[in-house]
Image (cartoon, rainbow, N blue to C red; front, side, top):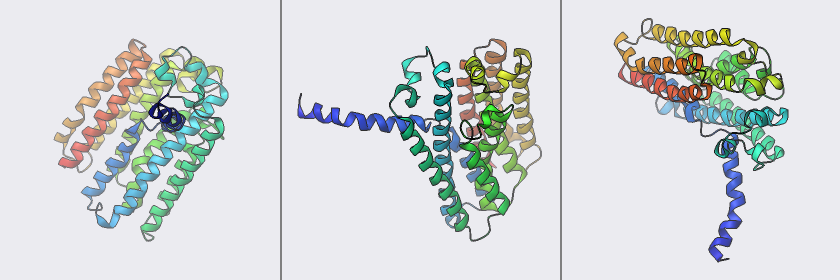
Length: 316
């Protein structure tokens, strides 16, 4: 063995651990940052995105990312402990299973717990320091909403196990994802606008579509561990109606955004592609029952929708 290969072998465990932590925190799902970006663009329109708000903006971004990473760790811990991940990932390609470092043994349960706690504390600290940098102008209600969201994010699959309660998974996803855009805007602007509420709700609904299609493919495994998602609770027909209602909610919110706020109706052209892609997603999911394909279409739809909104906000 050469010196180079020996050195590489020595580094491999550390590299594998690092990749394991990246997988555990679901860092690959960059889509969580979209809500913060849209909040930034709304603050820019309000004249509140400048040097005086750079610190709280940076801190709220850190809060968003650390909350995602801690929540991802908590979710994997829950799925590992109750066996649902082992059931749902059985027979899947090795590259897919590799995204679950607890299943592959790359990380130990203790390491996952430690990572989740550290990231959660970073998220809490970043959020509270952001509040302090605003010199008392951050509304107390916004701070409370922020803290509830941070607590809920790690109670999804462990602790209170919110995702195991009927409707709990869907409510938690909607609330936590909605907070990503709403909280930074609310803290810095000092108030809530219809635009901020609608935008945050849109991103939350788009994520809920992804999760709901994924839950359909995981129905059996979730049912065996009593994780009562809508896909488990509802018969196939009513569940497909639920998916259609989510699609209709997205269209309704987009209509409200471009007809009842400062945004010109012509700017709605920027989000026509996401409506079309959601229709395709509904076809593959509800009509053809290709649930995993529909889920992956959902990730692309979040890209398309958030980029469309960003373009509209920049052109406004």
